[in-house]
View (cartoon, rainbow, N blue to C red):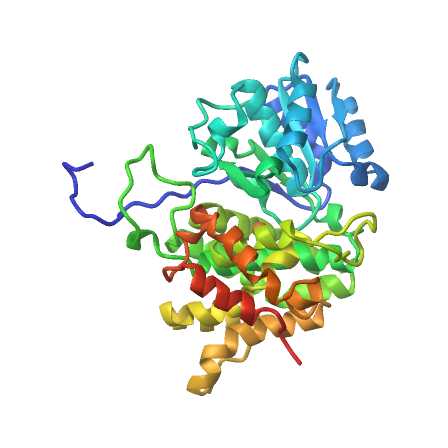
Length: 431
Ligand SMILES: [Fe+2]
């Protein structure tokens, strides 16, 4: 590299993604696609909720009709842990699967990525986990085919090279990032999301929104240090190609998030949300996310009593999309000076009228646009409504500071004091 160019800053960005099959009814083609990928004996990985909806059964039937001898693993942990990953890897070991199908949200798809990795290249978990929690060793080679069929319009895991988990003994959320983790094919079928109730639509929708916004405002690739090709991270920072995906995702969310929450059977809105999730996944899967996602990990991890509407009532839970959107308005008020035009453009794409704004209004137009979307779709009023108070600020900041892989993508240098200010400003959004 040095013989070509000697600059301290990065000059190269990358853009990789999963091949995509999109459209109503696309799920019915999974048998064809597995065979095309050379798979004869797949394991279908899903969770019990999707057994109840009947979708997992329908996929099993499609596989049988394609003469594929598929087994079913339905014990995916919602918000996977090191223990749940070990359990699924243990199940897979000794059986001769030659490929995987993941049906579900990010938990099912990430668990399938992990099962594929730990049974293809067995190693202690910490070998592959991101630094500083693990050693961040690269995945040694290509994995077996994995077809991902998302059932929420949210995480974008079907397009990304990342798998996320809770490490129970360390009380920390982290993950594995490597290009070989990317599924071989994403089958995105808006019909799989029509039965989601309103808040199981809204929370993942806000996850998509923050993916697009954080990537669109992240530190540009050429404002980061130069990397050797083998050490270049999956998240390289915003770049002209990631911007395209993020802008389109914001436009679709702006016109369809409220509609899909109001009426789950609005197929045009469901299609927009499914496309937005995929687009944002491609955008952030290369550019990266920053402060709201770094704070989301301890927010979700330190839940005490909050039980979200439209989710199983058995256990307290702050869904990922709710945890990320809770600090987004304060974050984008803080990042505004790094790229005022991007913040205004994002607000415009989300539906705001940005003509004839005063200087004071310009600074607040993106946060105010977010707050309007949040109020209209039933998002709780700040961290205090999720059960957090002043006594929790330090531990939330401490948890976010462990997410250095994400914080390096922040367009402003960030330390504990800034995170503390963002958390305090996010306690209550409106009066
Ligand atoms: Fe996310």
